[in-house]
View 1: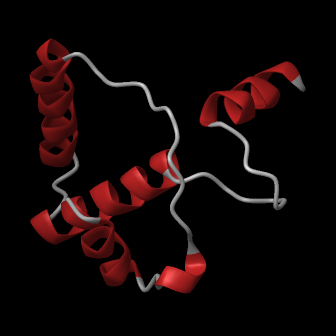
View 2 (view 1 turned 45 degrees about the horizontal axis):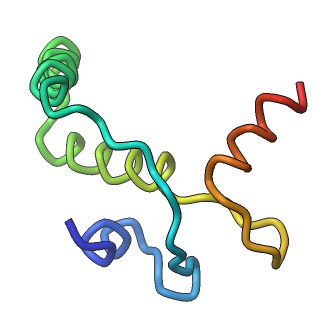
Length: 88
């Protein structure tokens, strides 16, 4: 899915984010179906409408994959992640 397809329905514009190349973990394809099924079961259990499902998935993706910028120095995803856990 393209960034614009995720951000426009949520009211986000290009000025709200910028794009950087970062290393990201990649999930093994054998887990995709199992995890997707768990998500689908939650949708059914709580009777979540298809529209709300798409909204939830857009928000989840953006919140998990986009990083919050607090300064002008680019920092790798893993450096931010380590900093989050090591600071506590």
